[in-house]
Amino acid sequence: MDFKLIAAALGILFVFIYAFGSGIWVSSSPGWYASLNRPSWQPPSAIFGLIWPYNFAVLGIAAYQVSRSLTKLENVTWLVFFGLSVITALIWAYQFYVPHNFLYASTALTLTAVLTIPVLVLTFRASLTMGLLLVPYQIWVAIAASLAWGYLAKN
Image 1 (tube, rainbow, N blue to C red):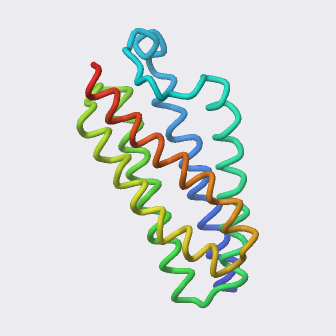
Image 2 (image 1 turned 45 degrees about the horizontal axis):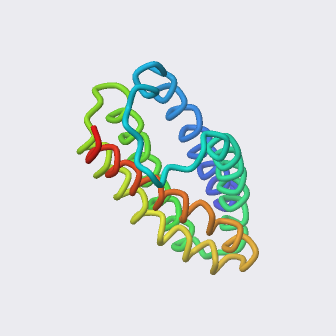
Image 3 (image 1 turned 90 degrees about the vertical axis):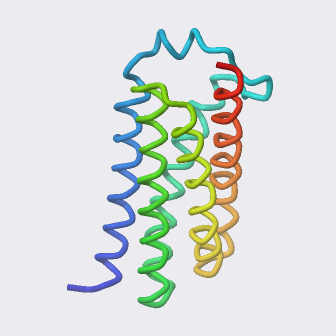
């Protein structure tokens, strides 16, 4: 089987796991979330509904573009860092929404932001356009990490 096809399929699978996995926990107790003291820099709720579909779509397209453009080693590196960032993002969603452990959640989301840096760098190597399209994801994850720490401080 073609390695590039497998790499693209794995990257896209990671995006689906990310989207559906976090959605399970995020919707687990909506009344609880509404009762939290929010950080002053939190964007309006409507922004969340716009940015996440964009991020997931761009991540899926980036997975395909990277698989087609980069070497085998670069593909494996992209998949490892992206896979680890998905795991830490899911840990954030679980820790924040289920046991409400803000410290673990904040730490996990900070790790997610750090782990996405090599993903972004390699995506730029694969395609300048895809790298630029992925910049909002990197910014969003960094903002989300700062919000997680803000929730820890305020609750």
